[in-house]
Image (cartoon, rainbow, N blue to C red; front, side, top):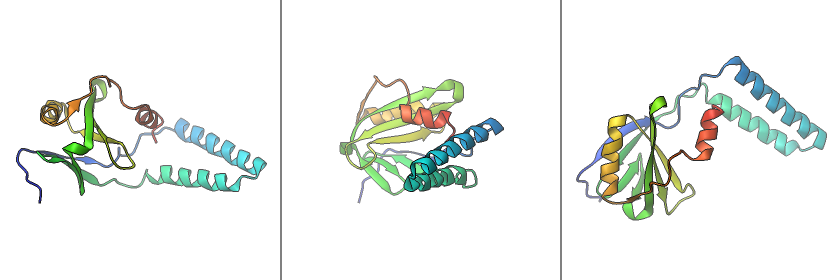
Length: 161
């Protein structure tokens, strides 16, 4: 049984809600998917064609799916995301990226175990940033070298995927 003392808790969506995509986004996506399918037909690469169709289905299905809320709790013992617990000894460092113009604040934690070595946790507002930084600084070192979000997340956000 874990001992809880001081804690911070908040909820956030598992992923960003429906992107606002214009007609040009859909036209561009259609051209890219069509070009890939033509390439698959020319090269007789039917497995890749199935993969292209599956990815297309997943991207478009996110338009109608409402992501559930995830509860994040930071305690003396570590960080809990729903049912997944990360003790302080499994976290190498953390950093917080702030994009004030977009009112986006994200906590990143580099973990030592698991398939996903980077936790990306949205902070709900600007006031939460300093609370989280103060609490995490007691247990884990802050990496001040990171000033931008990871390229993969930036690309996915810009492509509205």
